[in-house]
Structures are given as C-alpha cells and as structure tokens.
Image 1 (cartoon, rainbow, N blue to C red):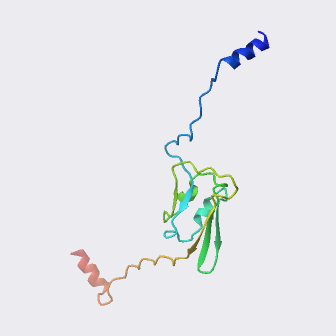
Image 2 (spheres, rainbow, N blue to C red; image 1 turned 90 degrees about the vertical axis):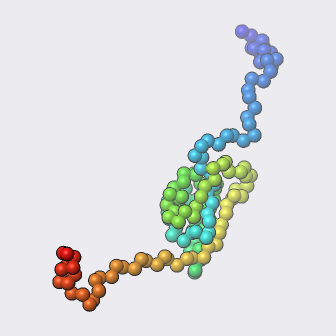
Length: 141
C-alpha cells in the first residue's frame, strides 16, 4: 500500500478516539488527601512514624507542636490513619485538586499539647477490718 494512500484514508476518516471526561471516575475505597482534626490530636507522632513517604512532619515546641502535611509527597497509602489511636486523621474519598505550583496544597497546624489521659485507679485490696480467715469462711458458705 502506498504511504500517501494510507495517509489520505487516515485524514479523511475523522476522529477515532473518544474524548476523556472532565474528571475520571473515582473507584470505591479510593484514598485521597489526609485531613487532621486538631481537637482530637494528642501529638503522639505515630502518624509521622508510620508515613513511609515523609509527607507528615511534626516539629515539637514548648506546650505545642506543628503538624504539617505535604500531599505532593504522599502516596495515599492510609498507614497514618491506621496508626492514629484517637482517629484524628481522615482521608478524602475523591481525587485531590489539580495544582500548578509545588507546595500549593501543603497544610500546617499549630496544635496545643494535651495532657495524657489519667490512668484508671487500681483495684483496692480487701477492707482492713476483715481478717483473711473471715473472708475465706464467708466465701465458703
């Protein structure tokens, strides 16, 4: 076949491709941008420890800390959410917005440290007025 004939057929045949939709459909279970609820965050830094992409950075300070997240580095794996015991982190279930400059979606929060939760009181031993033999005798009845 002559190359010019083939070229002419391709040019006259019109478009053979479908237009791409404005935004792709998101599959069920898709994990997107990570968000934090500063009211729930205790500053344990488990999210930073579990983030293999180093997208989460925590800078300590006196009485507070700075929590930063860079979606440009994030792999959207969800490991940070799995490590958060207080459920302070969530992920979107839609695609992140398009950004043109580096660091445009980066967010940072200054969060006040919360004191650790009080431990549950220990169970008290038997009352001091009762002797061990009286407790044993009472339990055998």
